[in-house]
Image 1 (tube, protein in one colour):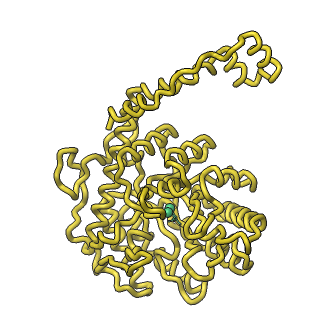
Image 2 (tube, rainbow, N blue to C red):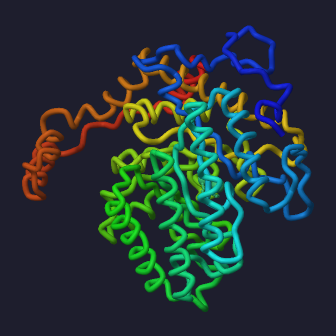
Image 3 (cartoon, rainbow, N blue to C red):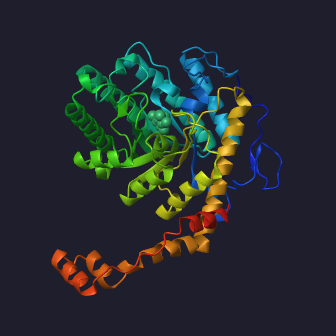
Length: 439
Ligand code: XLS
Ligand code: NI
Ligand code: NI
């Protein structure tokens, strides 16, 4: 299928403003519009994922795939993979997404040997490079799929089988080289099957140490080849395993610190993973931010009534507002972006559903960005929080923060005072209403 024909019904998607009734136009994402001194394009840094969008068949544990993808012949050939690349770039170009992300095995078929797999990847990477140059679309991050092939059934870096560790290392080496060659701005490590299904057969300490060694090898190799992209770890608490070692932001930070890796990694936080961990997305973002380790975001959302990683397109404006408040607080992305690690529902099986889904996600985040910026410009929320901590700005609070106090001096202080200052109301409902003013 020649270029520009896989999505004949998809025009170049343009901004038409909030009153537009055109479902193939943006009502909020206006790439060149400046917010807080930066274009929306640069704030949001949207990225399309190759795996869900171009490889997802829309199957579920109860049924076969439903997706209609006329350009895909269903074969595992390199030729089919190369054709798919052209289609992906046609889609992303029409959508106006500046970035994409892939796993090695999404873009190119796995061969009978790793040698063959590497050759397949090189062949497809040539086409990726051509299309990147043609369109100006860039690679947000690359990664290696270390969980689909049955050899990884016990995990990759945390496998009980040392040969599997070696295989995974070889695969990461190649995936990093290809990411580097394509000018990738980052490289992600998501734990795949790095975890356990039962502790009865698991040496946790040994597995965690192996994971630390594995990541250190990646850091060393990165330096060796001069790859300057950002490394990310992506927390997820469970699924496919019962427990994943990189369960949440706090667990990842602790792991990285313990293994002296913290300076080399930032976190890639995914909304549905946060909720699977029993946290809100804003909690995970705040924990990452507090450690100066927020790198990138896998933008999606879950369903509170379904207990798994449903990876839905993010359309909840309340949620996108919360996310963008944190991104703005951080001062914006540097290497990261909003990567739509999201898939259309099994019932949304037509090619055009991919367009509707991305437009919905992009507009929801654009709107979240505008709302977040308005909340910040208004200043009442920020002032409230600042004021809530006023007791730390001078007097005893200031002395504690500056390290001048100790238990004895604090005892003297409170003996003299008799009782702590009365507490002020947290005003939660007032604040919730304040946010609603902007929605
Ligand atoms: C799976 C993860 C995965 C990573 C990339 O749940 O979200 O898609 O983002 O390996
Ligand atoms: Ni993800
Ligand atoms: Ni996920």
